[in-house]
Structures are given as C-alpha cells and as structure tokens.
Amino acid sequence: MHQHFDGFDDEQWDEFKWEAHLNEVEKKSEQLRKFIASDPKGNIPRWLTLLQESQNEDDAFEAYVEEELLMDEAYFPEDEDDWDDEDDDWDDEDFLFGLNEDGFMDQADDDFDEFDEGEEWKSLSDQYMYTDYGSLEDLDAFYEAKEFAVDILKWAETVPVKQQSKDFQEFVDESLKIGAKLAGGHSFGFEPEYIGANIAYSKKALASANHALELLQSLKKKSLFVKKEYLEFHSVLFELRNDIGIYIQELRDQFRLGLE
Image 1 (cartoon, helix red, strand yellow):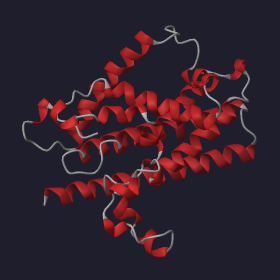
Image 2 (cartoon, one colour; image 1 turned 180 degrees about the vertical axis):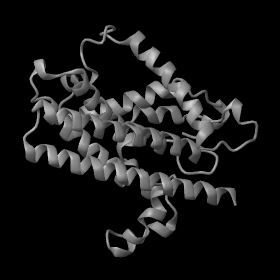
Image 3 (cartoon, helix red, strand yellow; image 1 turned 90 degrees about the vertical axis):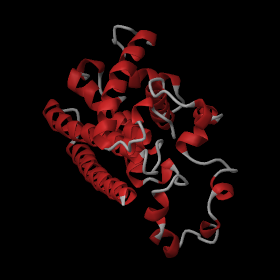
Image 4 (cartoon, one colour; image 1 turned 45 degrees about the horizontal axis):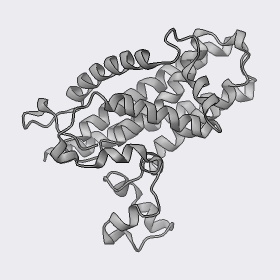
C-alpha cells in the first residue's frame, strides 16, 4: 500500500505520527461501518454475521480482515500517479492471503529462485519477509493470529447465546482484530517511508492481543471453557502476544536502518 500523503511534506513519518493518523482513520472507519451496517443497532455480532455468510471459519476470518482493510483504505487518500491500477488488487483474495500462481517467482529477485524449503531457505526467511516480496501468509505472527482467530470462532459457535456477554463479544472481536491489524501493517510494506505505518498497525495488533488476554482471564470465571481448552487458548495467545512484540522491535530496527 504505497500511498502518498499531503501530510508528508517530504518528511519521513515515524510510528508515532502514523499512529496518530491511524487513530483518526479508525474513528472515521467505525462511523462508516455503522452507517452502512445492515444491523445499525449492533444487535448481531459482526463475527456471527460473517460466519453465516461464509463457508467456514477460515473464510469468515479472511472476510473480517478484508473488510477491516477496506474500511481503513477509504480514509487513506492516494496519489493516482503513484497508485495506478493497484486498487484492483484489493478485489483479489490471493493478494491479501497469499500469492497466485503468477505471483512471487515472476517478480522476485533471481537470488531467490534457487532456494527450496531446506535450511538455507529458512535462514533467509526473515531477511526475505521484511521486503515487499514477502507474502502475508508467510509472516509467522499473522499465521499464528489467523490460526488462533479460527479456533476462537469455532469455540464461540459452541457458547450458548444467553452466555454471550459483552466481555465474550469483545473477546471474540479482539481475537479477530489481531490478525486484521497485522495485515493492515503488512499492506504498507517495509520500505523506509512506510514502515512507520507497519509499526503503528502492529502496535494496534499488540494492544488487541493484550486486551484479549485480559478478557480471556475474566471469562475463565464464567465457566465457558473446559480447563484444557482455556489453558490452550491462554498459552497460544500469550505466545502470540510475545511474538508480535518481537516483530515490532524488528520493524523498529528496520526503520532505524532506513534512517542511516
């Protein structure tokens, strides 16, 4: 998502300027969401609607992420000269959730053509991931967030309606939002002028993970889980939260390298 903003004034924004801008974007996108929602009073949880409209939990999660990205996209003005026809990519699920058959290998540097799934490839994975050739699905933190969100959706479907409290609804939403925010950051890429946006979005993912952990602990008292299930959710979410924290630090290191 290489876009050009009037606010840049030839200045490279850091994560804090991007974060302030993103906070304004979120306020506007939330207003837009309420305006166009088929359920304006919010009586039906968005995750439930998406499940009803999707074939399975994986599809529901991808629909949630795509919707979040498109809502934010509406409030990121773009320079048409720089953007060209890239808007069409947002209609392509392969662009958001993996590469199509004509994607990566045709565009990537020749240096990557010779690698397979062996140790040599793995040793270069981080270096490769932090380029605009990297696929969102190959980002470990996003993959973990997606797996966690799908598991939470499967669990949420088993919870009786009368037990679906405000905390429950918020927990499901925050669990989905983790991956959506990571995807939003990844869409900006890793080039110096936009990596601040990637960091700002990833910090939103971290905040959602932390909030989800708090909510999970509060839900433990509601008898919504068997012990093994709760411990598994807590373990995965705790590790995911830590991995996102490490990812943010790595992005900050990339940003500092870009300033040198």
